[in-house]
Amino acid sequence: MITCGRYIRSILYLLLLISVQFGPHAVEGVWPLPQAFTSSPERYPVNSQDFYFVYGRQSAAQQGCSVLDTAFKRYFSLIFPDHNSGSPADRLSWTIYLVPFCVPDNLSISAGKASLNAETVWGAVRGLETFSQLVYQDDFGSYFVNKTEIDDFPRFQFRGILLDTSRHFLPVQAILKTLDAMAYSKFNVFHWHIVDDPSFPYQSSTFPDLSSKGAFHPMTHIYTQSDVRRVISYARLWGIRVLPEFDSPGHTTSWGKGQPGLLTPCYKGGTPSGTFGPVNPALPSTYRFMARLFKEVSSVFPDSYVHLGGDEVDFHCWRSNPDVRVFMQKMGFGGDFTKLEAFYIENIVNITSALNKTSIVWQDVFDYHERVTFVLQRTSLSVVEVWRAGCYLCEVRRVVKAGLRVILASPWYLDQPGPTHNWARYYTVWPLAFKGSEEQKKLVIGGEVCMWGEYVDATNLTPRLWPRASAVAERLWSDEKQTSSVDKAFPRLQDFRCKLLRYFNLFYPLTYLTFKELNLMVQAKRQDAQCFLAMSAVLHADVFCFHFSSRRGIQAEPLYVGHCKHEYQGI
Image 1: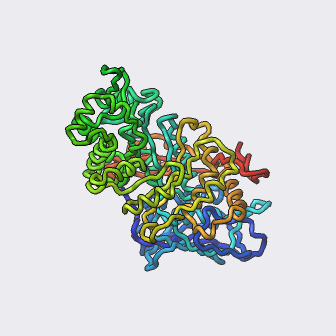
Image 2: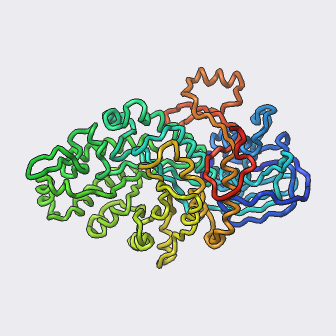
Image 3: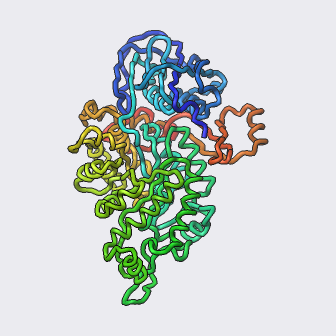
């Protein structure tokens, strides 16, 4: 995968031909709040005809870097949604410079130009989002930006959103739209809980029966290899990682439909009941299957992390099965089924470690491992996601005390219906408010919003997520001391919600193109489409095309009484 200077510092210049004016500051602020943000009433008119993105000659990243080239076109359309005199690609030029600076990233707007200093291309994309929020229109349709100085960096490295595509299938377009909204709030991890008990929509090339027999529908309710590559490629352009989760040994009912012998037969009164429980941990064939499946998963999903699940394992079926009980006696586990679960997870973690993947598990696995310390010491278990209610910071403290990294999810389950004004409940969460050393608190690498699918599908996904998820975004990005007041945050979030609403017309990937078709598009100077070549073997050199146009168009629920200036534009 092309990283376009991922580990180098770059300067991105946004050159504006502007003059100085003074007027009301019409922007409430930026969401999420930057680490350091100063703004002046001095404002400058911005004309789309005189607006340029420029790279610098000495940079390692040049024109052809798909991430930044695409970001320039996308943000031009977001900043100037009503611009229609020719394509911005006809006028924009770009250059990137290497500079010997360190974090934080810096955005400076003054008379004549705006400059964005970013350590990575991903930082540049976040900076473009910040800049786009600073440009505003007056009542006569003229664009302005105020004199501004910003230093910024994320507080936590892991800022995720989980989507559950098993309980209700989410079309690819709904996923891509969520990625758009994630980028606007500076989330950077899409946790794809792709399979579970109800359905297995992932179409495996190694085990095609898993989806053909385990999905809600084998043709319409599946994610093909093409769909998955499309999501990964699109997320990359926004600076978002795709973290797949294949949860086991529980939550696997749908797996058994396409893989006979994988699940544990349950017994009643000494005879099989005809029902099945979790994955059978007593059979060597189980681990051969898992090794082949995760080998495929590791090749399809390029991220260095994989989520293994491990939560809510019901031991009743294992307890009823005589073969499982014999295996436990042979292994010296006695009647302790937590040891059996730990044994299973140890094997799966070792399989993924051999594939150079770092495993993430739900907290249940850590809780079992605490009781089975010899397993904890032998496995490569390193990241635990805390999800249970109650004293979740007590659990965080226990995990970091064991030297493991933590992702916090407990306070951010947004799938249950609730009034939008309860955003403050998700905002007033303090992830590091536990007793521990500074080194232990550094092990909390971030958190994520969980949108489980029992009551969520494509019809209500977006308003259920936004703008409440944006409250979590600021908690994970911004300085805690500067964002402790709900009252001060409210006008900024209200303004940001209005920005999300503005109509955004995005036609998702049109098709795969042959090289001949792509050349014809280039020869015809089809500037309305942004095409890029996924160069890595992981993405199989597919060509994707996207149409980017106009505004954001995220159907975020209202926070309170009021209106947005552009709320019905385009409808």
